[in-house]
Length: 450
Image (cartoon, rainbow, N blue to C red):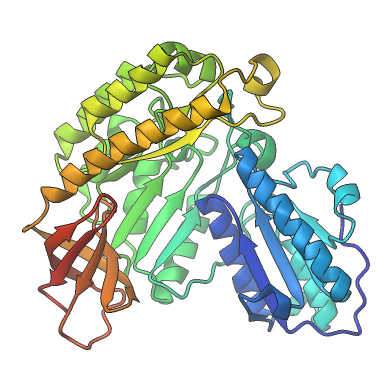
């Protein structure tokens, strides 16, 4: 699925990247944006102005795939009016094996790119601009399918992939079939990238992996997540380090001790439980029980009473009964986690569940269960945030939203804060007195502007 022939007489000037899906896709899009900008193209958010459009796609759920295909249909109609437009399709819709049927479905697409694949796009653009290989971006010492470029960021936070792909093959998950088997990036490459980001003003880095706890298991013994967290935190200019996503079967006490013992590593954990019922978890092929998750939460809270714990839940998995669903609700009521990302089960072609389990929970029932979990968690978060009124929290200021500054606490709570000072606080760590709250954010006054 190489690039289609594209005329070279029309110079590219502007590019537009549209990103759907997870943080890994966001990271990939930032690499592409940085590369295109260094080649001399200007970014635009208006797809109608662009000479090049990159659509970075997600198919983790059916709704995400429908959205991607809908965007492609629009781009196809746009190209009829603008024949010189170059369209690159990237990400999980293409897959690491590259779905050949896409060429027939979308003949107007010029280039099909696997997740984290950039070189064919850079070659196409470089050729159009008359740039030789020597003019293009240098690699950072990566090889094979590791990220070969340094990412751009005009903010104060950045996402850095540490583990590409996944080999766990949960029954419901399409990621191993779309992003390929798990592969850890060498620590030296990650640290080089982190230092580069710090030099550009980044003060918070989030390390990414489908199961981030497994970092380095495919490398040597010196490559493990605790050492990586400490090494990134030690880089001059980096104030905070986060990591996601964790798995109950793979997060160990060494990781917990590292977070508890390093002030720069944020006490926030993203640990997907998916269900509170052991029979459902077994059918999901998760490799843990509900009690395993409970014990893990207890160990984290014992080490860090102020830690925030987020989780993912799927409702309506094939065969899930009302009783099994209520087990999930009871687990959430018991543990009172800080955030729950809930989704209705969506059958994904090629997965174990799609091959072996009928999708037998009706859509309306899935929707009902999803709303129950959302309302339950909303009430939990309201009570947790109400308890913070009057307290002073630290936030990293990321941007300005209207008359308020926007930032997050180490626990990843969103805070909107006022400040009488006219100083630019972006990238600063400031103290905020909480004065009001909602289920998803806090409001306060900055008391120590820097």
